[in-house]
Image 1 (cartoon, chains in turn red, cyan):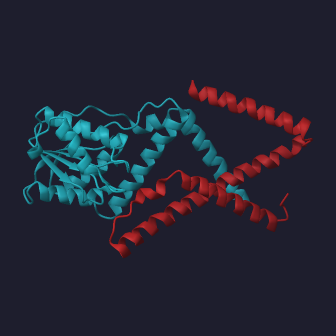
Image 2: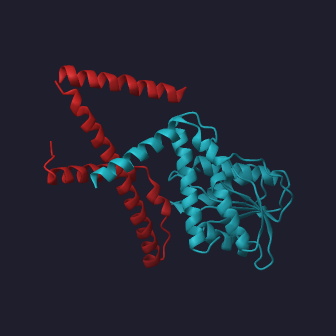
Image 3: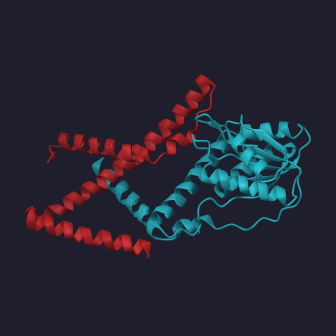
Length: 105
Length: 201
């Protein structure tokens, strides 16, 4: 029930967003496909950078343990905030690549 | 590169949607059976955190209460309470105060706050329980952590009976809780792989 509710809410606001975009902001419906592709792109870069961040954090903790002889928890690298920070890195990378490709909107 | 990112991104979003909106994490876990416990030399309660204010975290409290219940059932003459210092509060000591308040004799409680990993804790518990002869223990920790912890303690020569504590519902109904369960499963799988590579289990 909770899942259905959230999916329904998401569907309703998405439909409303498309309507507002097309009618109020004057956006072309055909460009929506490109926007969705960019969302997939951002998700992909986020996955990649999250893996990189977690792996680097893992190595950093092991190095700190070795160098300082004190306990540093590996679980520091499992904080959900790291995913959000990876989203920021991914967005920056995405726009950087887009500007190289002459696709910076 | 952008095309590859789109494929990975699409796959990741699909996976997140499957985990969040279907019972796939519940299916992956496979559930838990209540353990049949027999008397042992000690009950060993692994740590799970304490707040800076000196109060146990939810999971730590669950484990502590479970360990005390087993002690009160007469399953062992001693209870080893673990948990290091976080932000000035020492988890094992807070747990010992709970145990005393709930009627566990002070002489039956062993406080071990120095362990810095499950492996290190296993070595310290063995030393506290008398060294070379492999003692039998009832191990209390979270359900997700139990398989790895059990192997680590057995590797130290202890005979281990598992008394896992359910810390997250295995039948979550909300997407966020399903994601949390999946995260716990994946996190523990990575930890097991790491321990295997490091030769600790």
